[in-house]
Length: 256
Image (cartoon, rainbow, N blue to C red):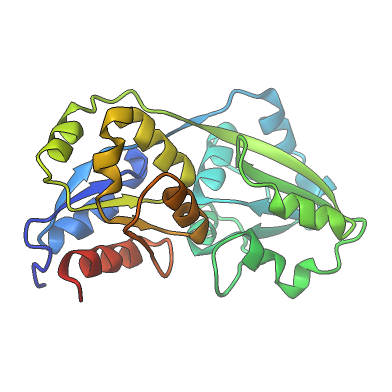
């Protein structure tokens, strides 16, 4: 495998428990992965989570927004989510679907192309949902588009928020030092919150230096936010999976 990254330093801002694979891929291609989680994902304490997961038969659809939504729902309910005949389970994208399969859940609906609420909402199975009860399993906060659209189609929609995102307590001085020495070559960011946290964690006085570095993001929404924050060398990956992020990083570094 060619070492095309040739010692380039790549900032990996994924949460700690999700950073390993991307970091390994970068290192296999000759790069140096600088691990700096800009987001930490933790369980929410809420008695309603367990009771809702044990009584899913009141819903026609249960939609998982992310692999984290699947894993934290399992964690809250002693590692299991009962399957019931009335419920169909939907995933927003392939990584979420994979987490569902690993949990022994059926994946009744997942977009073939795309990996967001819009792609899921385009599926024919979700066009006629009048009078149906839908449960969206997600983190605290997050986008409203899925629920808003399903409600406009006549569905009853509830949220089950199983995790929350917080800013990690990290020593940022190693990254600040790399910035000051112009020794960071690419930054990778997979969520809007992580980008905002990164800016806060490194401090306002370093944001100018930060914005000069090529930034790899996984959606147009994050690209718009990054542009508003002053980044001017932003590339959007074809998909949010680690191999696609790696390919985009290679293009940024080599120009090919």
